[in-house]
Image (cartoon, rainbow over all chains, first blue to last red; front, side, top):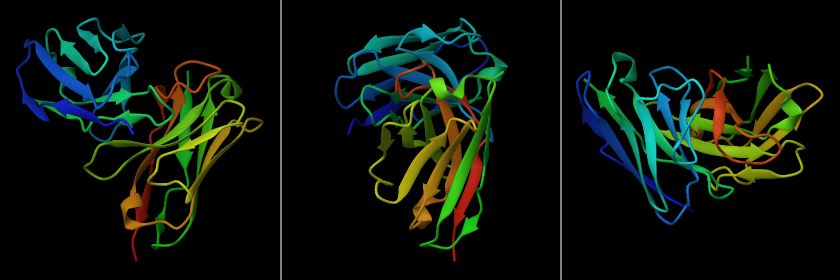
Length: 106
Length: 122
């Protein structure tokens, strides 16, 4: 099975900061990677798919890059609504797997 | 608007069984693969099981293979998860999730339900 890791596990930032989260896969997943945002008590929300495609309705301050085994999620200017936990997810095989998450707090 | 409404979560003893349901609306249910994803209290997300649009193929995480069974009734726009031989480590909020693209099992999800809580304890 493909294992996903994320770094950092927690990130402290301020409004207006540029934030980058890294996700690594244990083997190549091409561009079959999604990013989700989750707030406490809520379901996850899809932000990015195919590593760099922005889901409809998601603000353009969110961006994704990468392919193969290393990927990044960047928030260009952190907004108050962006404090949440972010998960990457690979879907290159029939056993989708999530990373452990990165909590972005103040 | 896509809506997914899970139900069936409950307190169950170890070794017990439970069936979860997910009622879908706002899209052509029979065109999309669906999955169950769970989240233990304070923990991350874990994909549990998926099923193709026609129900011809099902997929399971190793952690639930042989104990859980996913199914769907396209005439009722409903997804199910039958959970048998439940363990303490199965306790979680269970979400149903809709695949982004129609007609294929993509395994990435653009719509999620609000979740239903399964507690496994004696």
